[in-house]
Image 1 (tube, rainbow, N blue to C red):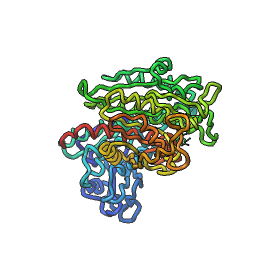
Image 2: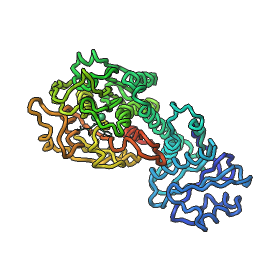
Image 3: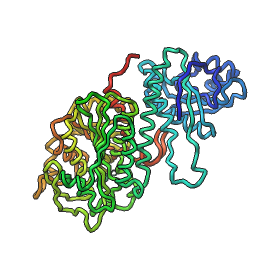
Length: 504
Ligand code: BES
Ligand code: MN
Ligand code: ZN
């Protein structure tokens, strides 16, 4: 979908669908909409007065204009109460609009900058949220559909109308960012939606190769032989029973100064998690094709950083493996020697994410990072603790945690902190190795993170557990049923916030 910004009026703009927002607690239609209402013979005022359109969050009403104005239809969309308006409300309203426009068999729309009349929200951020919401709301995964009914065309264009030329450039900047974050999320969703028989470790490498075609991006891939040489016992141990050999991807974007310390992301990339010898129950095991969400999000983030030409050095690390049972599989009781030199007794082969991440984090330490953020569908305990609306966050650096909290608020992909106290290490003690890979019954999200901490060097580090938000059981305005890729926009927003905001 292509979005453009134009100076223009509601009454003078030809389009298939003209999108008009309304607040819940205000029954008059607002000054900006008055000329439009006059042309429509007072229809909008009437619909507000009689309660046909109440402005509740994500409520929509479609009206045909029948020649009264150049726009063919008007789509009223509710923003909820004015004082409650947030960027995420705007994003969701536009996600709803995308679905409604597409339902009407139309492909284009025009609208104003939603929420501009609400103080504290900036025009560039609003434009970003709007574009982001439209792209996310329009997302569908159809490559395997051969029935034509499921091959709906995507939306083609949106015009954002502004009344002052001074807004044009600001809005343009927001559009560019929204396109980057929206597209990145769709890209990550695609990777996770593809089944594990297609999205194998070598296919993930192919995807990384495509990204390395972007300017200032460089790709290095470590194959199993190279990993053996380095001593990456974690990745090799997890991947050793699969017919698809494990890989280790290093994707670097150098947008900052040479020698400037990189921001390093490490993404758990298990292309399928069967549990291994500690086999998972079969119910919902298909969801484990998305156990590579962390890695997909890291790829998407590096790609977005490159496309936005951010003045930062960013490195994405992906330990990639398929966790399978088999004659050569790692068995409960086996001891692995990790890249850091520490030894781990594998008591449960289903706790594989921490094993591959341990090597990723140890590798990150060699890159002299400014900070390291790992992101992973790590624990079922995260789902138990947080449900489906919060990402679990644990880490060693208060300022980095604070920055991620802020990025979470802006992006609508919010994090919630859990304790990372060393007392919990009691649960990770092994009789035969430096540690074991499971922590017993209580605090599963915490012991998993504490396990990772054993491989973290002297750099600011935060771990994000996205097992909670990873998969949606239902369609929501900006989220389709299945893999959500939640976390992608959080990471990109974190990078955007690190780049000083231009003057408004
Ligand atoms: N990939 C799973 C975690 C997961 C579960 C993500 C459900 C998304 C939805 C992870 O590898 C896993 O199996 N974790 C185990 C660890 C346990 C054996 C200590 C878990 O949480 O059950
Ligand atoms: Mn597992
Ligand atoms: Zn897993």
